Amino acid sequence: MQFNVKLSKAPFSARKGRLVIDLIRGKNINKALEVLQFVHKRPARCLTKLLRSCIANVEYYNSQDANKDLPKVDSDELVIAEARVDEGPLVGYRRRWNPRARGAAFPINKRTCHLKLVMDEPPAAEEEEGRPKKKKAGKKAAPEAAAAEKEPEKEAADLAATEETGETESGDDRNGEE
Image (tube, rainbow, N blue to C red; front, side):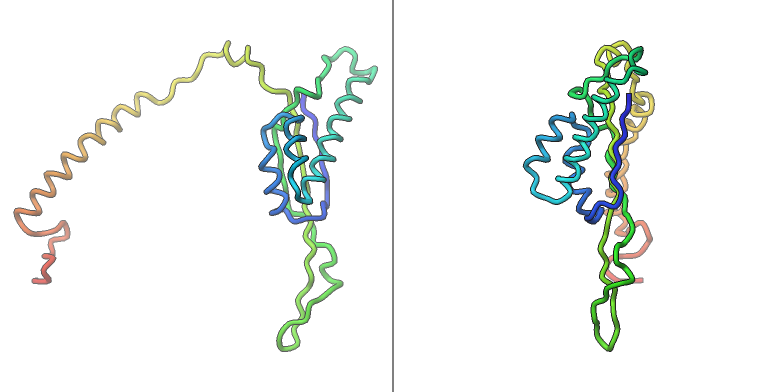
């Protein structure tokens, strides 16, 4: 079962948020919390709050009477399946200005971003073993390999022919004679 957690208008740029979110993408939720504990960047605090919020959502989901028939979800087993950082609106874009040359003024851009995390249960090892593995394109690889073996022979023959005639493929001499 998937659990979504979002944070809108986080007070840092999307570029800085992507640096931190790349550290935790695809990891177990507890491992991600450990990693974020030692990252000294502003987005790490927001992502830690988001992950803890997701854990609380899972516990609340498990405690609901309406979900008694559904299987329980262990919050320790969840994996970050999707992690996105999108650009948000500029805050204070029209209010504050920096003076520039020749009387011009540039706005002060306070960038924000939107964070989205999707937690999911890890794929079961039994399901992966039960499925037959797809074969890679072996038929196409063989003709390509044969063509690759023929190319050096063809290049050697072309090189010998150019040495005998003294001409390149374009028909010009390298000596500058026409």
